[in-house]
Image (cartoon, rainbow, N blue to C red; front, side, top):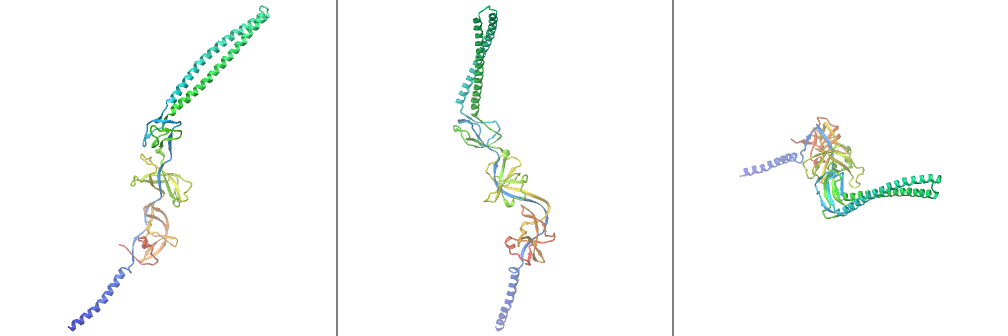
Length: 390
C-alpha cells in the first residue's frame, strides 16, 4: 500500500515537466510564432492606367421646339420617345383667323393688279392725247406765224398740249402709286402666309423627343416649349473627375463607360471636352466623354461610371498594389531575407485598375516580397521574423 502511494506521488511530479514543455511548444506555435505572410515577386504584365469619374448622361444639343405666335394647339403629331426627322410636322395651331387675313390680303393684291391695268390704260390714253395735242399746237403755231390763224387760237392749242402733258405725268404717278400699293399688298400677303405657316410646327433637326411639354387644346405663346428635342449624335457623359487624378486626362483619350441600367456592359468612348473651372467644394473637374457609337436608347440624367485610359504599358515589371507601403514618406515593399523583413524603397509607375502597380526600379527578379492583410502589414518592422504561407 505504501509502495502504491509513493509511486502515485512521483507520477504527479513527472506530469508538471510535461505540461511545461507542452506550454512552451504551444507558445512558440501561436503567440511567439513568426507572422505568416504571402510571398510575391515582380512579374511582367500588361498594365493600363485609368482614371475614374462619376457622372450623368447628357445631350450637348437640346432644343426646345416652340411657336413663333400665340395660338391654341389643335393637333399633335409626335410623342415622347419618338425619333423625328428635320422638317417633320410635329404640331398644328388654330389658323382660321390667319387664313382669313391671307384671303383678305390676296384680294387686296388682286384689286391692286386690276387698278394697275386701269391706270396703265389711262397712261397710254394720256400719251396718245399728248402726242395729238403737241402736233396740233405745232401746226397752229406755224399757221399763226403765217397769219393763217389768230395767235389766240394757236395759244389755245399750246395750252391744250401742256394740259395733255400734265395728264401724262398724273397718269405716270398713278401707275407708280398702284405699283407701290402692289408691293405693299405682296408684303401683306407674304406676312399673312407666314402667319399661316407659323401655325405648323416642324422639327428643326433630326433627334429624339425627350419630353412633350403641352397637350392638345393648350394655348401656346412665343418661346413656350411644346417639345424638347435632343440630338442622339451629341449624347455624352458629363463626368466629374478628382483634380488629383487629372494627370494624363486629355481630349481624345479612350474611355470605358458603364451605365447604371446596364451594370455588366462596358461601352467605349473618348474624352470630347475638358472643363476649365473646377468645383471649389468637391475639387472635381467636369470632363465630357462621348460615346464611340451613338446610343440607340438613352435616358438623360442616368448615372454613369467612366474610366478614362491615361496610359498603357506592355510587358512591364509589376507587383500587386497591396504589397506597396509608405514608410517615412517613402514608397517601398517588405522583402524577406533569411526569414526576416527588410524594407526596400522602390520607384513606382502607373497603377492598373486590377490592383497592379508598375515597378520602375528598386527590386530584383529574385526578391521575395511579403504581402499580408493591411492590419498586419501596419505592424511590420525592420528585422521582424516572418514565415511564408504555403
